[in-house]
Image (cartoon, rainbow, N blue to C red; front, side, top):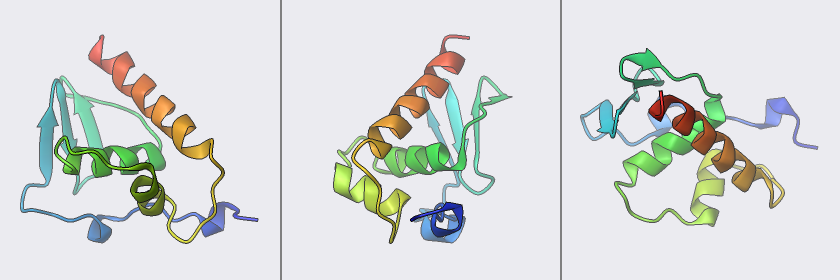
Length: 102
């Protein structure tokens, strides 16, 4: 069950905004209001769900975000199997590594 219509990515109003729509970490800049990640000025392509995960993690400011909270934020009201989150984090790491090495 849980087709594409049941999955809703985080939207900008769901993301707590502290007045700073842009966040920098390493060579990356995340513009939350435009939902755009850049590295050295070049756009980093990634899925909505990967970007949602990145926003949640970056906004945590280095604090641990536990698996349950991350799953709840990324897949609200949707059942996901145990492999969904590790697969998503793997894709996110790969996307970041490809651009950070460039």
